[in-house]
Length: 215
Length: 184
Ligand SMILES: [Zn+2]
Image (cartoon, rainbow over all chains, first blue to last red; front, side, top):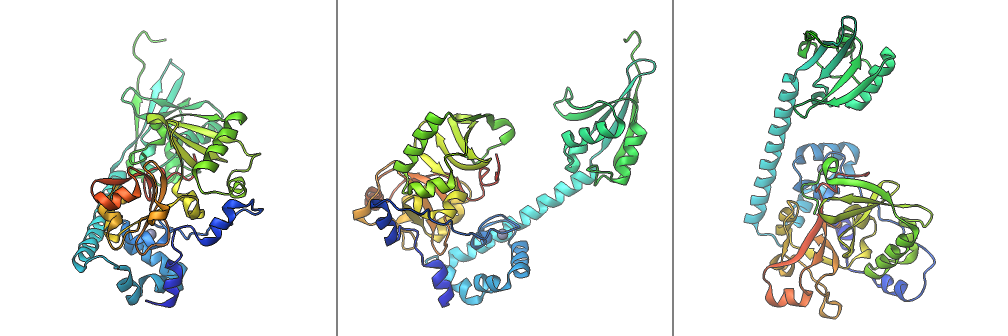
């Protein structure tokens, strides 16, 4: 195991001698915080990437962003050293688990993407009175569009009221005052503002006529 | 505590903490952790207001400028968040688990005595033994940074003697839903 390695790992978490000295007498200075490098992919301190579900991407990222650290962490000798007191069998099991976890996470991400691509956005033109309409937009959240922000964007674009409301099924939708269904479709197709990432084929406009005797 | 934690439904509200209460929290932390007043002042300056984020199951998370710094169950001990412990690892006494136990802790398991007493693990020496109910930083074999924060369920000497059952209860760990919340 390299000297560097030793140095990085050896500060035992137990209180260092100086800590004891500080405790008794009043010290004047605050201790500076430790700097920890967190992985941009899995958010863990990089030494824990091996326990996450994205080790392949974690390694790619580290190699790109800090190749010296990458070498230190993933060199053959570092890999040997980190096995520590774990038996070879247990280490093999761990690696197997990591691979499995990763495959599972990827499958999950794939499924989520598929689901997203299959998600439908419904723009419903609802007739309130003979001349008054509202437009309800349903399903934006599947494309990671923040509904509140989207409502704000639509309200200012059409200079009208727009709000996020709960539907009877518990989902949320945006209701815009006025008939703006076609315009909303265009905005989604062009990806205006935050209304991005929706394939045109997933957008559907429907119509809801006024029930007789309504207001 | 934070294995399945959804901010949307598990948080009941944010309230600024009264200054008299802040004073008593500050004193509790100074007595419960191994922290110098100056370091605590750097983490949580007196002029910055503390905000109590009330959560389900009587969990209170405290934030300063929206950053979660510590939490508490009922009026029991205060625990630093794992991110705070990463910055100031000396503020809690340390225990160490062996490499084999890491993945269990990362899935939210409690820490069994054998994971602490085995060759890769580490408990404080007899003269620095910890009593049951002490907040600890949970470190791991071959790793520099803590993997979790927890509380001893028995004295560390008992862990060595009986070597059975849960030695340390994990309160927050790397990758749980509190870890995911950088701002609250
Ligand atoms: Zn990573």
